[in-house]
Each structure stands twice: as C-alpha cells, then as structure tokens.
Length: 250
Image 1 (spheres, one colour):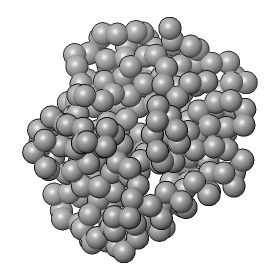
Image 2 (image 1 turned 120 degrees about the horizontal axis):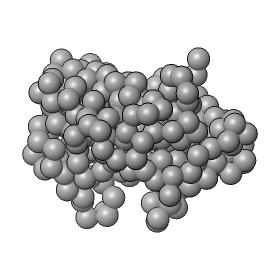
Image 3 (image 1 turned 45 degrees about the vertical axis):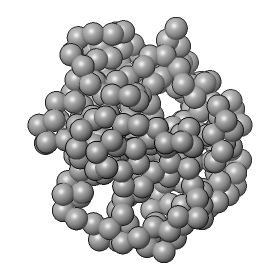
Image 4 (image 1 turned 60 degrees about the vertical axis):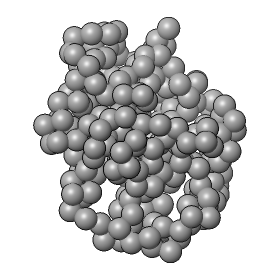
C-alpha cells in the first residue's frame, strides 16, 4: 500500500531529511586520503545524534553500522571498517535518519578521494545527472516507471549500466515503503504518482556491466566485473507542481 503524507507529516519528514543534507555536507569536508571509513562513520553518528535524531541504519535488519561506506567497485551497503581511503578512490556514502517525530529520511552521495581518473569523474557526474533527471519525472500523473526509464536512458546513452538487483523505494514512517522504484524499465508502467507521495530515488550506476554479487559479510554488494560504481539518492516529495527535494539545503 502506498501511503500519502499530510502536510504535517511532510514537515516532520523534512526535518529528518534536513539532517541528512547537513550530515552529507559535513562529511564532504573530511573525506580525504588517509581517513578510514570507520572514522567517517563515527563522525556521522555523532553529528546525527547531536541533532537529536538517530542513524536509521544502525541495527536495521541486523546492519552493524550507522552509515554505509562503499568504495570503488562496492555498489552499496559497504560496512565501515579500518580500511584507509587512498588517493584516486571513490566513496559512496548512504545514510538514513530517524527523527524524534517518528519519520525517516534517506540520502546518498558518491565522493572523490583526492584526484580521480577522468573516466571515473564521468561516472560520478552521469550518475548524479540521472538522479535529477529521474526526479524531474516525479510529477502527478506520471507513473513510477517514467522515473525508472528516464534514469536508464541517460545512463546507457553515456555508456554505463544501471544496477537491477537494488531499487529505490517509498519512505515515511518506515524506512522502506511502497512503491519500489527501479532504475530501469519501460515507461508508462507501475502506480500513478499522486500528491503526497514521498520517494527515495537512488540510481546505482556501474562503469561496466550491471551484475552485482553480495560478499560473505552478507551486506556489501560489489560489481561482478570489478569496475567502479556510483550511487546518488534524494528523498523527494510529489506535489501538484514541481517535485520537492527534501534532502537538500536551499
């Protein structure tokens, strides 16, 4: 069941989403060669809690950390560790926030570590572009797969592939709600978008093939061919006018 949010509920969600946006902005300043993903996680955990919220991922379905830190060929759900970031790496940060008002927000970004290759720069750029192209289709009257198709077309026109094993989702009082939002597919399919829907749109894009596998830790998904992957995500509100990005600071 797709749950439409009231204006009061949307404001509560927006509070959680603003904390995500602020946390990501703070993380940008500390992602440098020499830092460990464990240090980044501690920083994010402290920052979220200092804003009187909780890291939504901690303990979710048994996940052991407060954020996900995925490096290079790791697509999503990388677990923070003592691994040291090196010049030329890319790091995807995925984090959720649970607010004191009882609502969730979800967001992700892929960041360069030091100087990266131009082809990897393009991967990051195209992935972020595809996110905003998808968001632009999140309008009343469109269908879920209109978002999906617009993301896939942009990614594939640029020579990359969209991950198919993981998808975006609705969000609200639960971290994962209906509908599921794939990043691929034909247009004009799936539920019709309505005012008050809140969606976590999150393209995951691989430099090579779209196939992924999950490592023995039960969480970390990597590309089968070992090529890098990028991930961007915003929590978005569908309105009668333009879509509103909740995980963004104006």
